[in-house]
Image: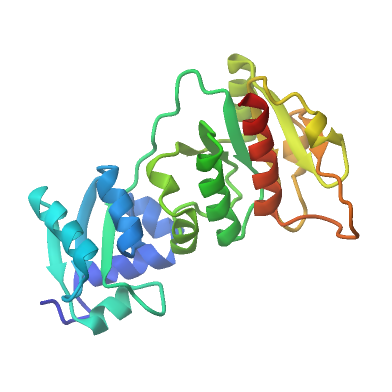
Amino acid sequence: MLTSTTNPKIKLIRALQARARSRREAGAFVIEGVRLVEEAVAADWHTQFVLYTPGLDERGDDIITAYQQRGVEIIPVSPGVMQHASDTQSPQGILAVLSMKSLPAPIDADFILILDGVRDPGNMGTLLRTALAAGTDAVWLHPGVVDAYSPKVLRAAMGAHFHLPIETVSWEDVQKRAASSGLILFLADSTEGQPYTGAAFERPLGLILGGEAHGASDQAWAVNPQPVHIPMLGRAESLNAAIAGAILLFEVARQRA
């Protein structure tokens, strides 16, 4: 059993938990908890090694058995070491270090979510989870958004990373890809454009969703998207980015059903 918090693997995990730069340099990220690790196993995602504390429940034991059968390094650790490595206050007793990779988008992708300026990890994770549920083909991230592989984003996304192509794309490339694929670009705004229910979302599209504080950037507007808004019946000025995204994504899904 590993009992030292100065072990190189524990130091690596701490770095991966804390810094986007460390994740990029190592090409790896950390997931925690039975639910997320189960999703990684089911997706057959490449796993570098796993930490666990003895006394897992049946689901946890099944995960350990599955990884052992695949030849993945399994390391029992003390509760203190798990607490030190974890990004949560109450670790669930299992943690995995996974290799970072990008899933390929479908060749005929015609439903893209484009995130611009989203910096809240909870909103980012919820948007990824919602995009998967609404049938989005891929998510394009502007370089200024929160790191999609940060611990809080991963927890909020609930496994969406293992099924949804997620890619960082510059605005120049957004414009080029949209033109080559015949995508109509829509942009969610608080007041501009037509009401979202009147937009023609059956067409191949890219939906741009801006950040929590200031909405979409000038760069996003520069790609000449068609603005749409969600009419407010009460006195609220705007909606939370994740809530607005959910409404719009499922309107696309509704129109296409």
